[in-house]
Image 1 (cartoon, rainbow, N blue to C red):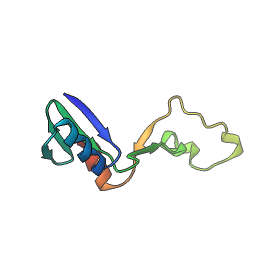
Image 2: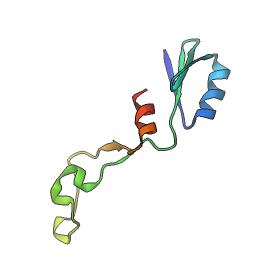
Image 3: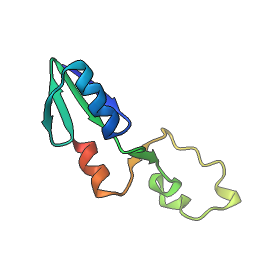
Image 4: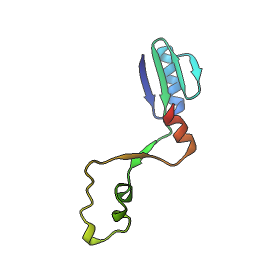
Amino acid sequence: MIVCIAEKPSVAKDIAKIIGANSSHDGYMEGNGYQVTWTFGHLCTLKEPDDYTPLWKRWSLASLPMIPPRFGIKLIEDQGIKKQFAI
């Protein structure tokens, strides 16, 4: 199975039609060995400094530089985005 991810539903539907993924499901289309799904623009964003540690909640010169051990991402707070990301 090959998964294609498009930036928006209309583009996903065009791709699905071309590659023969004609079976519609909730949040994706499938067929001919492909699954085609989509996003709604940005699904994720970089974590905020206080997502790493509460000490970075308030900005201060003393806490610079704020460099986490590993940068992370988080889902944008929107029910439609959370549902599509789960799909």
